[in-house]
Length: 360
Ligand code: EPS
Image (cartoon, rainbow, N blue to C red; front, top):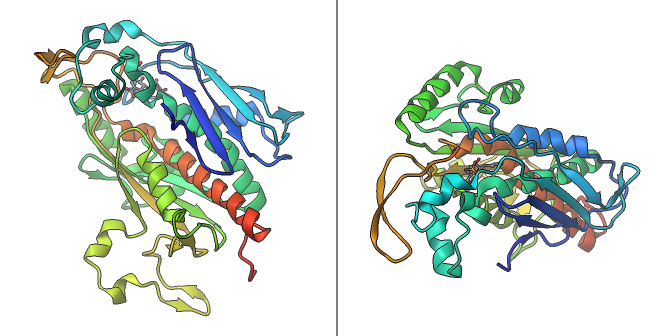
């Protein structure tokens, strides 16, 4: 596989499989002097971890990240930052029954078609376990963005299955329930929906939204490195992502130009249908993104499929799966947003000599 790196100037390379000895990443290009320690990264990882509630995978990983290089006396040195997490609760035997069968809707079919090799243990490289390292790297980016530019990133669960979860938005609530819902009043309905799915063995989709505040104008590289294009690629690269919207997204199809344009006054913009990006460049408004996650495909409800010989088989997936991968996706979307912004801050600095636009 030749594309395991992400970003140009803040370049993150991840490695490892769900049931291998460890997963890890290397960040190349982090500016020196940033104060960071492993505990700050661990607390971000805890937000994404499995087993925090009955509604997610019950695999119990400590995600005890080790900082192997690039940080000395609590500050980044400018050299590659290597991080490693040992996999301590892998259970490959859960997958022996499907070692030669394909789960419909799962990457194990296309990995087989592409490579002709099957690491059936927990999906191998295609497992969402890989997102651990996105969150770890994102924690470093996030710290830099906050400290140097005051950029704040917040994600939340906007919808789970049929339940809209952000009609009432209270940022304080987001980290106080296992769903990252900003509306406490829907949590009982979410619990009920997930309990019903767990009993039936089915799964559901979700929508995660995120905003970055205090983003300076000027980030984004026309025409092939647009900020919104890079955000879309980053979000679509998350496991199970099937759709990305920036600002009004697909709603813009129904809008008139007079409604969609965000009028500008001396006091600022009067709306943000653009999601903070115009012509691929940040406008100085909040950057807004929303991601659709499909219902997970590892189900214990039997279904039709084929084996590696092309013979018809019945597939049942055992193991400790997430009935809704979107429940744990909020920290991952936040991390990808941080990584894209970080990369573009460094790119802007490289060309313009500073992170903010030249008129400021
Ligand atoms: C995953 C399947 C499950 C999850 C895993 C992601 O793996 P397993 O069957 O090995 O328990 O537990 O999630 C994590 C381990 C994690 O850290 O996110 C999948 O198929 O993507």
